[in-house]
Length: 461
Image (cartoon, rainbow, N blue to C red; front, side):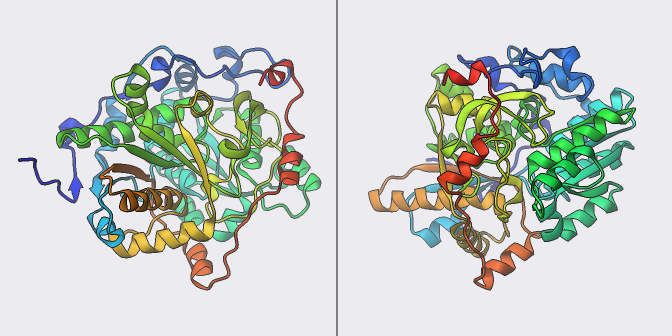
């Protein structure tokens, strides 16, 4: 007789993963290397040192080492909020009247409200060990900025955050949490940097984008002694740190001999999605198991679904390394949708390679339907989800309803990356019936594609 699966499955502290998993080591087709934005030559360790922390560069460039030990200091910090629970969504299943079994990995049980703290403490730790004074970064919805400000306060580092302007205005309380932890927060694009002034001149009245904020943060880090730039998503080092999500989820499911059929995550830059799927994707690549992976994007910023798989600038100012990824073009300025953490023009290079190789699906959803699912989830499960996470919720619900139609008892796992308690302006607009959907036209996308670099590598595919 099988064991009754509890609502929440917790690992013990002793079962907390001791190593991060590097999915790239098991990939048959490795993600393409970073290129210099001016020379288009492959960038190595020394090329990246002026911008990034030394140890993080090593992690970024390593696509052969399968596991990286998590330093004791980071594991001790993790124990304040990890292991995070894996939850069986019994009430949601009952509401949907579906034979599907629905699980979600909940990452919102810390003050930052999201999974971002998993990488923030790691990056701050390596910056501190290098003897730096502080770090600069960007933030979209504010979750990454909040997490990094917490980590920096814990380790005694200065933290300068450039927050996408529309989120700075929509989410004032998350901004104040950052300031409470001692970070300086600047709406982006600002008039404090050369690239910010240029973007404001090119796009008067712009609400900003993650690409804009990245450019400003990189400029300040490059021009300030004792500082480096750190990033909350997109880079492979971030996905490495976030693999703790998937490692914990898999260990919890293995306790009850449960194997997911479908694994779903929201997709902006790729950190939470990549972290959730990493150990499962590794099994699929090695032929040990099979899973269906679904990346869920906002219809307003559909890089995996409607973008091009080419080399592109990671930032609007075109100063960061070129990455081969699914992209809408660094010049694409997404509409002011409420899932601020998903408003990025490109996708992590590893996830892009997996998508190109047919190992992962991508789909888009409109924000009005996303919030409708978020409200129903909150009523059933007692957690008000972040707008970003709610993209995964919506598709999980749709897949569960398909099981209702077919009678299939599939197991669905999705990532609940954080809570939405600082996103009440968004919920207010939905509740008031004034929320609108933003779908870029083909002409909008073509304007973004026009900013792609002109290079021989982009003529291949």
